Image (cartoon, rainbow, N blue to C red):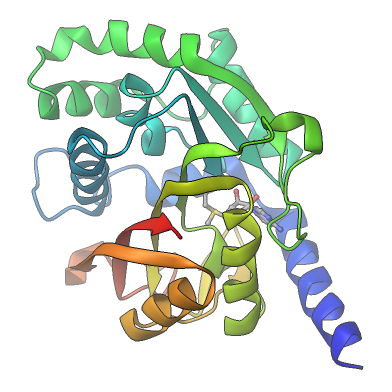
Length: 273
Ligand code: SAM
């Protein structure tokens, strides 16, 4: 019975995602006020600063970086693409993989212009903003593939997608809590993605705090597991990670724009034991 319940919860989440609209999702979350590069307290600059710091401290390195549940977004690999020779993007939905392929092939028609993001990360790296074209070229050069993923499977990626030793680093943003029916499934998913990571490899995890739903498109209400910091730490421990750092961002009132009920964001840097 318990096994069947698990399957039903996961299947219900997958059904919610059938209405996901990449263009709307990008508009809700990746334009001002949430992506206002003039404001230090805007959510996207906060995330980019966390990722920049994590990727430039010197301990996160290797050959292969894998992004779990990329969605239609690229911001999460803009710092990592300078450190890793190979970056693998993944998502559950073909519409999101298509959006990413559109950018990779540079044929126009993307639903978001990533230029201000590229410029902002260049600035964080102490480069002139005009270096964004070099960063875009670098990113296109290191992305090796965009493949399907399902974090509810014990083996989330196709076997051919990864070398046998696993990835050197995983990044995953707003994925696990927004695709899991409950906390137990979130913790299991953390364990599943850990199997893709080599021992001693890093996990950089960004996620929502206190969120019970978000809109993946007009009228597409997707349930989320509401998490607090203690639950995130306990799930990491249970799934075989050692926490290095947890940072928390609290949403200012004017970032609460009616597309979800998120109250904060966590950033985790951890190591696989
Ligand atoms: N990483 C992006 C970001 O930071 O905005 C997208 C996050 S979005 C809230 C959640 C993503 O999880 C969607 O792109 C969705 O397609 C993906 N997803 C849905 N079900 C999934 C599953 N079972 N396994 C992995 N990813 C899934």
